[in-house]
Image (cartoon, rainbow over all chains, first blue to last red; front, side):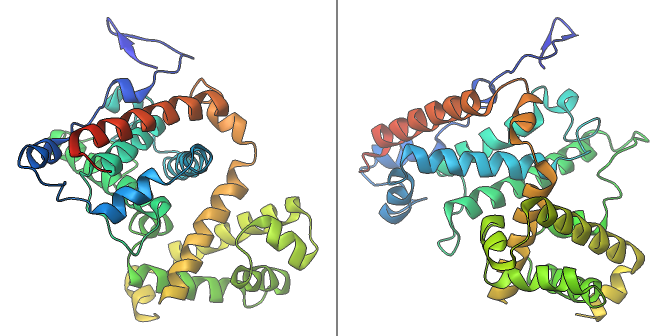
Length: 236
Length: 59
C-alpha cells in the first residue's frame, strides 16, 4: 500500500490521516486576534459538533462508498492511482475531505447537508488532482483514464450543475419510455429515499431492484455515449 | 430544479448501493474492515474537533 525503500507493500492498510494532515491556517490567526474563526460561524461549528459518533459513522461510510464508486476503474494509473498519491486513493480523498471540512479550509454553503458538503469537497479534490497531474505530465504522452471520461462520469464529476441535472433527467425519460418495469422503478424515485422504501412500495426484492438500477445506469451510459454533447444540451 | 437535483443525488446513491453489493468487500480491498476503518476515522474526527475547539475557543 505504501512505498518503503521503493518497495510496494501489499495488503496493509495505511491510514491516510497520518500522511495528509491539513493545518488550521486561518483559525490560529483569528484566535490570536480575539476573533472567532471567519470561515465558519457558530451555525457551522454547531452542525459539526452536534453530530453524534453514530451519525459521523454513517457520514463517513456514505462518503467512503461515494469515493469508492467515483474512483471505479480509475486507480490503476493516472491522477488517482496509488502510485501517484502514495497512499490508498479512496482513503486519501475521504481523509482530506473530512480534514478540509472540519478545519474550515472549505467554503461552507448552508443549503447543503454535511454529506453534500463532503461530496462537493471530494469532487473539488478529484478535479484538483487531475489538474496537478496533467500539469506535472504535460510534456509526456501519457495514457490516462481522465482524458476521455464517459459522459455520465463527467456529469457525476460536476454534479452540482443545473444543466447536468437536466441532462440526466432527459436521459432517464428517454431510456425508460419503452420499458414498463424500468418506468415504474424510476417513478418510485419520487417517494423513496432508500431501496428498503422501494421494496415496500413496489413489493419487489432487493436483488431485483439492484438489477433494475444497474440496467438503468447501463442504458443511460449507452444513451449518453451515443448522443453528442451538443445534441444532449440542445434537448434539455 | 431542486427536484432534478434530488433525483440526480438519488440516482448516484442508488447506483452506488446497487454496484457495491457487499460493502465489507469494499473495505477489504483497502486492507481493513468497515468497523476498523470507521473507528480510525472517528478517532481522527474527534481529534480534529478537539483541536478546532482549542484553537478557536468555539464553543
